[in-house]
Image (cartoon, rainbow, N blue to C red; front, side, top):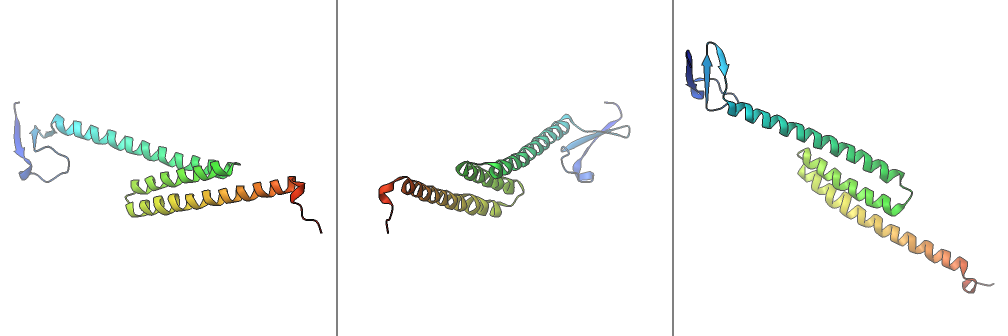
Length: 142
């Protein structure tokens, strides 16, 4: 290339993401194809990351709405547990692994288990009361 010179990065100001060598031709900066490929790959990864974050946000909103609007208590608890797992993933995406671990262990695991145990106890108590009301032999006479 006529009028082009090669200079190493040591003689130029440091810039992130530039290749080890670049060419200047008549005052224009020509950067190698490798730089454009890595920049394109970074843009694609950024786009995918943003799409995943948007999908995660919409998933959290949908799960929260479904858990609150569900008339079936078991389904609501399962949706709450799924919401907690997605929330833990959101904390990981926000670079807060300690909060994500606490959310997964306490918010999803412990609270989910307690809610399921309470539901089981509630259903067994309501079954016992309905059986007691239907069976005339178990009525107490004064």
